[in-house]
Length: 185
Image 1 (cartoon, rainbow, N blue to C red):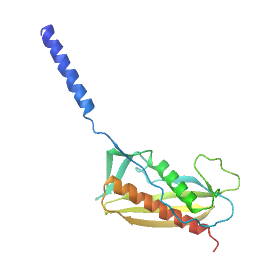
Image 2 (image 1 turned 135 degrees about the horizontal axis):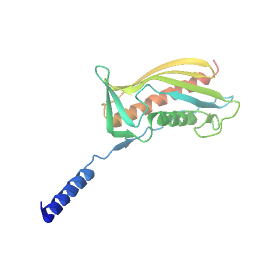
Image 3 (image 1 turned 90 degrees about the vertical axis):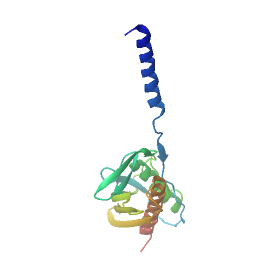
Image 4 (image 1 turned 180 degrees about the vertical axis):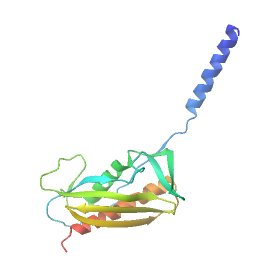
């Protein structure tokens, strides 16, 4: 092979490699929204989320939807802005903060005082699909008092935008129920 042919072949290979680099599908990034709520006058020690556990396979950056036959649709080019566990923690904490008086919620990253009511959450399910709804099924406790919630939010479709909106709404309902549990009975 002559020098000119090798040079042409090398240039063609570089061009082909460069085209595949530029033609990659760009990721779409999604986040969860805080949903406004009604401020409830609760007294006592502040609350803070100590732990959140998501179902195996869901605490990731890729958006995941359930499919029929126990399968998951992992959307590699449709991603959360952070791992889902971090988004859930921040969204729920700020949903609680807008529902409780100022200073009643210890937000992620703030120092935890010695006198604090701890919230621990274990999500059995936090997903959309295969039906067009988001299902939040969580066991949670505030200062050792255990509770269970199952929340279903209908969504228009199983596209990632609808899933993000439905999860945001489900977390807001959970925040409402946590706040209600803090009220004197």
